[in-house]
Amino acid sequence: MPVKFTVSELKGNLKFLFLVALIISLSTFSLQLMLMHYEKVSNKLYDELAKTELEISQYRNLVWLIHNNDSTNAQTNFLLNEYKQIQESLQNSQIEFMRKHFLEIQSKIQSNHLIEYSQLINHEECLSIMVRCSNYANEFRDTHNKAIEKFQNRVDFINMTILALLSILSFFFVYTIFYANYGE
Image (cartoon, rainbow, N blue to C red):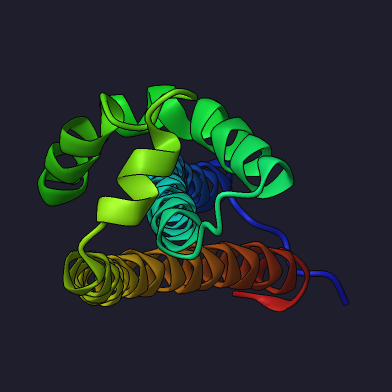
């Protein structure tokens, strides 16, 4: 036999349900905004990491090509093409020691001076730059991976919180349905 409720009981339950729904909706909205912010920061960190890895890789390749240039026309042309492709990014590099080294050798890497520079190159300097690039890449990768992991943990926590809030909201809706049918 169905139970009859008074208007004040129904209004009280509906007000409670709408209050819970409003609080959960506002909380979910603000958490979604936080989630979007953290994902943007994570994407920015990924982009910085990829850009730096590419820059270091290109520079190491350039130094290796200079170091191993045998002064043949084909290899010299290849080296000059590689140099021209990465010249702008290396002039504006955020990596100080790479930019400084590049600016030192930049004036010497021209088609008329390349053979002379290849013969006068300091092999220890090439190896030193290669090692510094590798060390810098490892340190940069480690710090960015830690930051990315930290943001990913925050994103995971926010996702779990949103899931919990939606579960609570679902519980209250189911509770209201049962209360409307069987409650007293």
